[in-house]
Image (cartoon, rainbow, N blue to C red):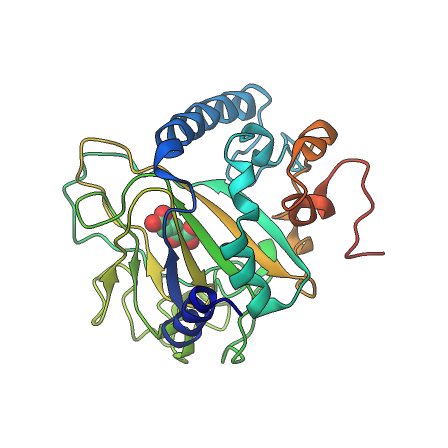
Length: 280
Ligand SMILES: O=C(O)CCC(=O)C(=O)O
């Protein structure tokens, strides 16, 4: 294994997160950021016009909508970056696919810098029972999903870089325990700072890779510019992504056909007219 990939995988296993720096090169990032902002505005407009829900990527009656990758042709090639796939495949093996593709831009000029909303992500999101499925606690010691947050703006305290609690992916507690159907005792307030939290720092064009179990939170962005980001969830072949209807948005045929060869396998399971290799 390449030395950098090994170092990142070691950090991911030990700390629950790592940053792959500048996957989108410096000479392309400004263009890609503008493209993503325009794509976000267009997708929002289209979903509103048809009475659908952009967050869930569903139509007016809850049916699968258009996967947001259809709006992002200039961003899509980076999803197949060798370092990123190297990390995902070192953790999951060769067969990896992307569950969700969502915009995660944060509004500017926030002053409530103590705001937190700590949680772990699907399939370890304790509020996501019927919507997408959730793993029962105590979570097994296995990585089941990598939440890859694309840092299209620089990340840091001055721009609302994500809060993470290192090593919390191995903690038997969870900041949303009280929200489970079992109503487990709450011992951690998800809306307050947590001891040991740190704010992710890194240059624009990087990817923050998080084990879905890690406790993390969006941060208030005090800067005068939006903090632009996208999340893509990399999953192993054995994880059911369709359950609950959360991940069923369709990749149009023309979008799929235009994807680079390294990216096609990540979306093939949702591509119009393609056989789902995970069901065959
Ligand atoms: O946007 C961020 O900084 C964090 C996003 C997040 O918490 C999530 O997508 O689960």
